[in-house]
Image 1 (cartoon, rainbow, N blue to C red):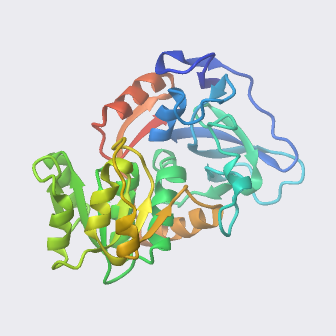
Image 2: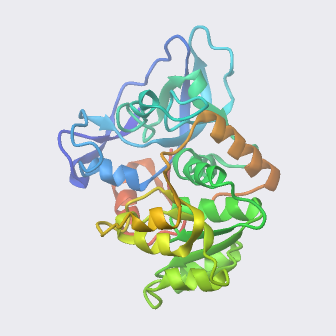
Length: 334
């Protein structure tokens, strides 16, 4: 089978499409013929050695993928050949709160990942794909979508709440779609007016360009009559966290997800004085994935795909992701 492998060292130049043996499902495993996989910023960090500098190489990259079951190992009862499935980011996290044990096994890092034509995985580590979604659409869900879902549900997002989103990458666009489906008001920032216009088409209630309006925290408070937003989905990290804390209401919730804005100063005094709940969100469990899929099916939501590349052009896809020009998700097809 073809696979996208980070070979003997870190750096995008060390990624190659190679031939690997097709895996065989062991007891309790299924073999999935992957039809699509999606990229995450994490894949860039892994390739550059910034995510896990001690990563064992070579490694097949990718955490997100979808396809059909083509074989089952001994003892498998949940799935049959032909079932359409997507894999879980953390194969061991079934339900309940996160634990150190489940975080130590993730696809594309501790284990070979989804940028390949086949994947052998535990039968408990996949979910059924909503019927209305294509494989390419379903492949966008395991990391970015589940992360956005976890962040919003933990923050008790619903009617009467206001959510502030940053940028128009995968997590933020999923959070926009989910928050609107949950009945919330959504504010969103971007450096591109064209992307903000697309966000409005997806249901955003108000937008601002953070390059022409760098005081977007004040703008967010103005949109809430000075009260502050209920929830911030924070994908920038230290570089934007202080403004997020100023934008959120007293007693509000900041879901810390990404580090896209790089380094910055962080004064914890705002967390204290405003009694803000600051929570790190590290994707989610299989149970969260299944609950999210029920909402996707009920509302007939469709993931936003920016661009697709064939598997053999994975390096070009990673460079496209790195450029930051995308709106929504970047997908590989097999």
